[in-house]
Amino acid sequence: MRCPMCQLESAAPVLKVGAGDYCACPQCGGLYLDPYPARQTNAVFEGDAGAAEQQALEVARRGYFLRHLIRIEKHVGRTVQNWRLMEIGCGSGVLLQTAIARGWQADALEMSPELAAIARRINPTAKITVADVVDHTTGAAEYDAVMALDVLEHVLDPGLMLRNCCSLLKPGGLLLLQTPNTASLRFRTQGAAWEMMDPDQHINLFSQRGLEMLLENSCFEVVTLSTVSGSGMEVGAARAAAAVKQWVLDRGKLGNALCVLARRRV
Ligand SMILES: [Zn+2]
Image (cartoon, rainbow, N blue to C red):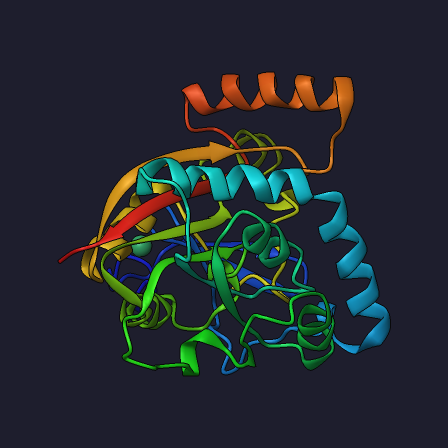
């Protein structure tokens, strides 16, 4: 099959993981499910109980969301005022709430109706649409920034997701993506036991090279690429220790997730 990340056609070695298998792409170093699923699942976020659990996690990660927003704001280069942000997969809307408090005019897509209902309650000014990003094409090009944290690995067609993100952005607009890193120290040391190898949810797992190739084959140029690690929920001394660990791991791009900021080509 063709690698969904770099498009190489190959019969690559298959890594056995639980009930599913991942194929390791010899060109980009990414991993994709083999056989490739016909549909994607989102089971972890279904139902009111799942939504409440997700909301609690997001509240604990408010500082982490703020750091991601600041990554974008640094590259926009001016004071944020009525700039438009689209978040793909907003969950219960805690990141949106943080963005709106900082001056962003923010909207979102969210696949789970239960999570979208919570997000609307806490963000009454935001337009929150229940939709999958791969089905959503507005062509309106009205946003200054699009963020998608921990979404790319879940979608069947990551190239289509990036093209749809491109259609949402104004020319020169910024895309911030975060997704698991197949060159991470965790994967190198744990192999098939790496927690990101989750065939029920994660269809494609990216290397730096695969992510850069997919972005450049869409309409983006990479501005910064770093790796991040930790849960984002650490506080106090644990937060300081996590920041040091992240800095050290990022020297070799060994963090558990890739975090890329890319600009839509004009
Ligand atoms: Zn590949």
